[in-house]
Image 1 (tube, rainbow, N blue to C red):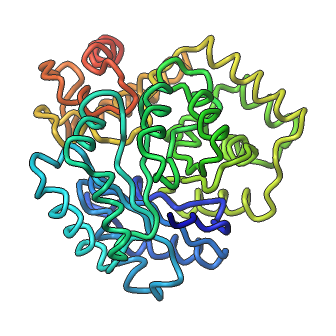
Image 2 (cartoon, rainbow, N blue to C red; image 1 turned 90 degrees about the horizontal axis):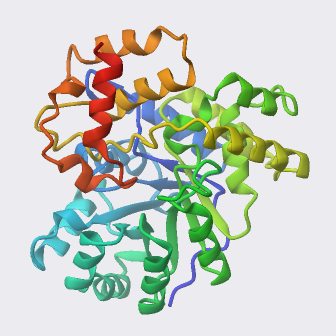
Image 3 (cartoon, rainbow, N blue to C red; image 1 turned 90 degrees about the vertical axis):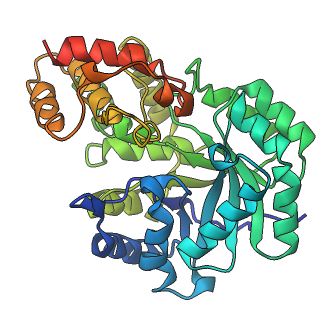
Length: 373
């Protein structure tokens, strides 16, 4: 079995939330961000077949593959279980991914979003684990692993059945450490106890941990007044042993600059800083919000064209900032070009693909009552 490289950049560039212009990925903007990231000596890029409705892998070709020597960067993508209806689909999707990105091989390749039920069953049904090992032998995959959104029990079972897996990508942040659905802390402990390298996604929980209630921000600012709130989330994850790379889905150059600052001379959390994080965690548990990470998997198949993550962002802002007028103003502009929360017909397509297992249909009813009154 090949060994995952010991030298991996602590900060990875996630290509899921790229800047857009006129409804398309803004390639010149992405190029500037890629250049800043590479100039900092970092080189791990993470994309997937479904990101940006299938255009993220193409953006990787335009902004990275065509502009840098192949050996100078590391590129990861993922096999989507929901695209596999017959055995031939596995090779079809993979070959399409090679073509989209304009590469002959992927450095890291993942089975996308293993979770209890259909995705896990699909990968087993079509023998995708042995398929991945064969692609490694052919030199088309350098390192093989999976991303995970399931239960701790399923994670242990998959690792027992497939010890050939070289790494695992999990959602982990201080807000989800004890989240009864995500259970980040339990997943981390399973992987760490087995010495399995971890790639971390959603360290800032889809941007939710970049802007907090004033009473929470004050606890961080009292210790490090010049540091961003987002940097605390990244440092929390980066302080954990066994974490190989932390993915950040950066959407603009300001986020890139702030993240590079955080990782340039990385400092693990001190005891006092860990105590501040625990205090913020306690406040969060007392302020329930919708745990949407804005992955947008729910949007493409919505027959009513509801921009579900944006609707939930407005609701969360109302919950966190009672007197803020902006959520309703934001929502009013949002639904000029997309469906309203009350347009939901309850088809369940969104719930079937949500990695956070949110009861989206009921949450949209709540959103309609708050935002459309």
